[in-house]
Amino acid sequence: MPLTVPPLTGHDVDLVVPATLQGNTTEERIARRLTVTEPYVTRLLPEQLPELNVNPALLSSLSPADDYFVVAFVCTFRPAADGDDAPFKEARVGIRLSVPGGGPQPVALALSPDTASAASGHSLSFALSVPLVVVEPSVEFATDGSQEERYITAYGLGSSDPEWLLRDVARQPLSGDVLLAVVVRAPAGAAVVAEVIVAATLRKLMVLRSRADLPSRLHTIDLRAAATPALFAAPAGELPAGSAGSAGSAGQ
Image (cartoon, rainbow, N blue to C red; front, side, top):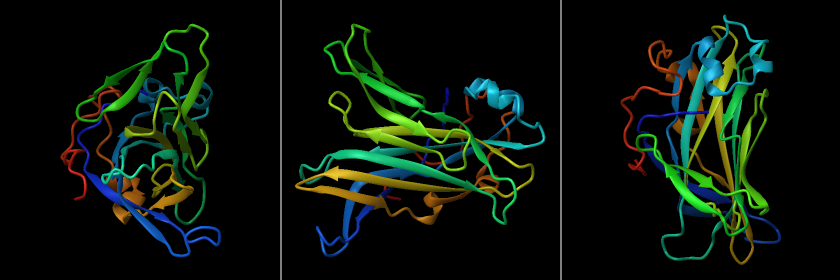
């Protein structure tokens, strides 16, 4: 899904490790390891959906009367500032889509990225694509028979609770900025809520499983209220710049 998003305001969020009988007996909070931006939300016209890689089988069942949105945000996974060797092992980023009060529910029509793999042989090289200020890592490799390791996998296409699994692999550490985006179909005129959930596992002396303590502005998104107008003039892959702050302004 080709997406160019405007600058987004980033916020440092704590990772909360719950108390367990086998491990820490008190809750632990890990600071300055994860930044999540405020989301970019825009409406789409039905004719723009093929440009965003919506499956043709799904397109045939869509109603032009329904509402369509793109939700995009960036998660930044950071090394420990104090040099503590506790790399990220994996992370899950989920979005729960709902219409308060029941009735037909919104669903994900496309997820970006859907998959990403790195070759485990010696032919791997790294590249960066830079849409405005958002850095999205990409990988280039030659098909020489080397085994590939998948480090991003999307789940839940066509459902109301899509998610991404991000993994640390030998040639692609779980570190840096990751741009995530979803195309949403919602019942016409309905209030639509997207709840963002981020969980991460760090590898220390023991495995630490945590959940990000997201403030309400990052956790609960009213798509209709947050959306910019539909992209009537611009191609769907070229989202117009908004008034949000820079993605580098973390911690605000």
